[in-house]
Image (cartoon, rainbow, N blue to C red; front, top):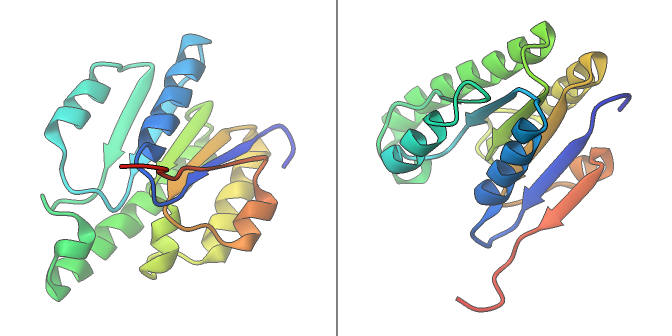
Length: 163
């Protein structure tokens, strides 16, 4: 990618979102504008309220409506949330197309591949759009595929040695 970078935080351990948020804060402290789009998360009012206090430097968007995490929803609720997450993906594309921020964090985007909300061509499209305007991307998720590993500039595996 020309002029933009992709960082990925993945693995079964806790702390991927925290690492991405830390990077977002670091970039915001350098005067960069940051947008975070979260996927596959149940409503976490305390975390959301904290991040909202970082506005306008860091803006958080969530498109899911259910309180529970995606995997805890029934089939009908999951179908509704898939539509909401697709709206979130479209929003991310719009952010990149308009050059709305310097850093775009797509929290749990890797999980969209697993649940069929997105495919590799969607991810590649985001990377290409980011390269066009120089926006840095940060992805998080549990599993990473070889293609995304290849496309990324930096990949961090987060795992617990002891819990």
